Image (cartoon, rainbow, N blue to C red):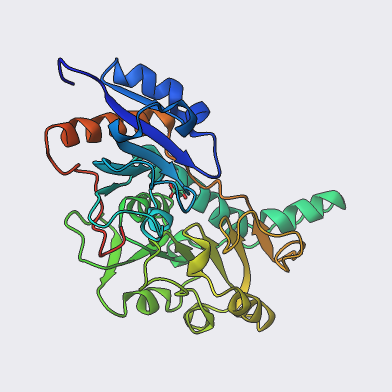
Length: 319
Ligand code: GLV
């Protein structure tokens, strides 16, 4: 990066051992241009210029007065932006890992196919030695609404369209590079419009003040009867009581839930054990260590040159 000293960073997480997860990839990518340690390994906190974070403790930033940027190890920066100790105006970066979009698409398509092609029904039949064929729909008759037109939404819509399903995407702004065969709805009202008559609703929105609790009874009521929710955004997008009410009323047949308002999902939560729900532990996607390392290095170089990192989010917009 420079002929002089390596830029110093710190890992800040209450939840994960970021050093174990990302340390080897960062060492390999950085080639001596940056150093990073856990708080216990920092001798001179005033020399720390960046932080790599996932859900840092409330007081985590207080010891480091000279931060130039912070980076989340994932795509969603909602928790970081809501952090009470985050210095105002400090650039907050997210990782933009192309593999993460593919992982999201893989998860969503798995769930859609699982439900659409009746795999659970066939598994139950197989357990009783029953050879019964499920009905097959013309793929284009299956309406899939994707909420979110960023890199995740794009990857999901691309996969949906590749399988021949009808894909529509609700997005804030009209896309610069729309996918062929995908219908876009943008601006105010695009989310309810996309949900209209949808068999599947895939949520990959960022969590912002505008999108919190957007998955509610009224939205489910717009979908085709017996529809299915694939919730791979953030737990706070979903009004959990409304999901249960929509299931009980038959608006939805079920939901795939990868995220929850409280994670890990508490032992006593009513979602556990409900046969209409397919619960996974926030694994739909994760930025790869290599992408985190490369993008951290890129951001550190930009910050060192006095530039705002290109991966910095719009803090006011929330993503
Ligand atoms: C995962 O949830 C992420 O934000 O990358």
